[in-house]
Length: 465
Ligand SMILES: NC(=O)C1=CN([C@@H]2O[C@H](COP(=O)(O)OP(=O)(O)OC[C@H]3O[C@@H](n4cnc5c(N)ncnc54)[C@H](O)[C@@H]3O)[C@@H](O)[C@H]2O)[C@@H](O)CC1
Ligand SMILES: [K+]
Image (cartoon, rainbow, N blue to C red; front, side, top):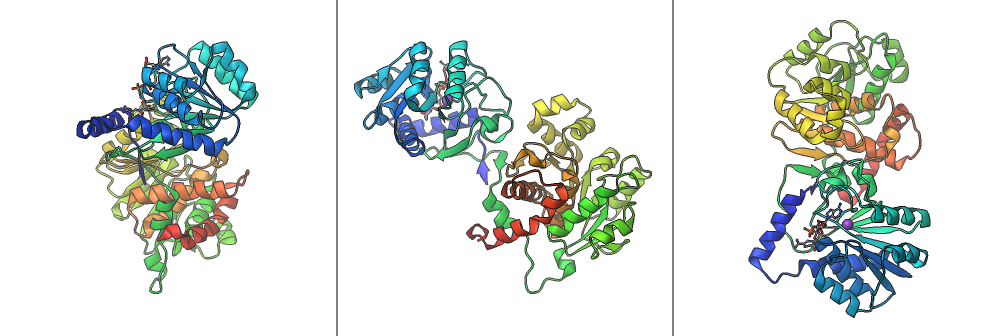
């Protein structure tokens, strides 16, 4: 699990270092790391460093001085002002200064551009001269290594602005929101996190990693039986949306449920023909999955209220989200997409898309449930305000039916005894990781069938220990 720090939190942590040791050379450590990673990702050829007026530019120019010991380095002060000591160091090391026109012309001979224009102090967007260079980098296919974050982005959000598009980003201490929230994250390329001696504070935002999924995935042991592995009661699908029932049962079974009981309104013959182990009808269970593919079939309110009376953990998906009962929904996992969350909160989808973090937090605080907001970035918010971002995956999972499978996976994890936040994070992460390991337009049921191989791979990996 990695902590995600805001620019203000990172600045406060840096200040704490300087309060302890006014001579701390954080910029020197940052520059050394940038130079090392630049040499790793582009070992030969000239490097162009584009420097802004603040400390981000200082990092880049000190890195330029180090790189100039072994290869040609050019630099452009994009705003004329720049960190004076760093400019002096770059000049003393033999770096050649160019202007805006010279920077674009130099790209033909460069194997790497280091973007050190703005970092934590970035105001979103880019002036025209920089946008011209960004376009020229794209046209010349010169890779960009961004310092801290691609200049032009806002460190504290996933919003897209005119910015550099990096192949690699070197950041310090820990990731910032722009590195892990889409669509901004797609501009960061591979993110290298470098320790420069700043103690990263605990925050209310974290991002899960594959190692967390491996460590926390529930596995049966020698004493397990179907009940201890977890029985999932699945009330999904309808006459109109029969496939949703198949998909959610598939998700639960392929994620390792001990048993699936089906109580929904789709034709049970269809489900049994695909999954003969499914038991049709009520019975003992440890978790409930509700709502996927209900459409506007009757009795939603009563079915949700009945589930509440069972006092079992529940995944509440899709159409069941319209019928949330009053009171605190402890132990429940709501799985809306942006449109469904907007309806829950009484705001617009555009508002949720622009402010996903505050919206998902608000829904969890208001309902007392854990809320998994599905989408390109998947957020799991707890009523306490803590949010965990699931492991990211490719956009192939953005298709009808993925959510039905995910509801089933999360149901199996709740039934295995995981707390709702962990079930949400692991469910969303395993689906993303399976899609990443099987690139291409697989259908949701085909991907569900590949979950066991992914789980087996995780279980045998050293990450699981
Ligand atoms: N504070 C520290 O001790 C450390 C900071 N570090 C670096 O310092 C950075 C933060 O430095 P700063 O606070 O100086 O801020 P930045 O260097 O990110 O940017 C501030 C400067 O850029 C200008 N600017 C911002 N957005 C602009 C835009 N869109 N168009 C034109 N000009 C724009 C501002 O007016 C200001 O002059 C970090 O991102 C990191 O790279 C590292 O050296 C590690 C240590
Ligand atoms: K930058």
